[in-house]
Picture 1 (spheres, rainbow, N blue to C red):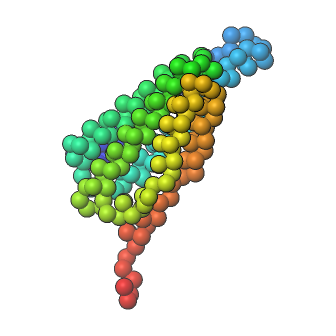
Picture 2 (cartoon, rainbow, N blue to C red; picture 1 turned 60 degrees about the vertical axis):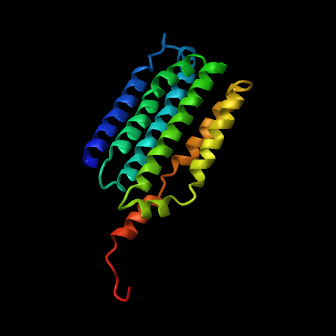
Picture 3 (tube, one colour; picture 1 turned 90 degrees about the vertical axis):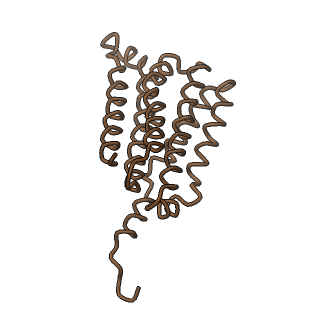
Length: 200
């Protein structure tokens, strides 16, 4: 399978995920500021989840550039990632309805952790692939942000049991960490595409 088909399918799934999330935003029950304020937790949950899906879409786009062919393992790893991301709208709605509750916060964090692990697995499989895997490995490097994110998610899951709001704060921290586009792969692509200069 060519990588174009996998990328197009992934883009479609992520677009549907965002659509489902926005459809879960309901109009205020009355034309008052109090009714609008009552929807604030749901809107903030939507905003955070939208940012997460956008981050995955952006980084997935960069990651696919390293692919030359799609193996069966890569295809299933990609579907594994999409599975966890597809659960975000459900978890977002639950968390929006019970913003200070332990279980919705824990489940939301668990889904984020599993999505991060799935992305890490997909990234490893692409790096281990023959061809462009070597330069992708150099571009990723020690992957400090990725490891820090996993640590934050794990800590957030522990915090969710005793301090759900603090755990949600860690979800925001990780999103802010990745909100600035990751330029490592872009820089590696530019270097790889540069024609050989005289004297090289």
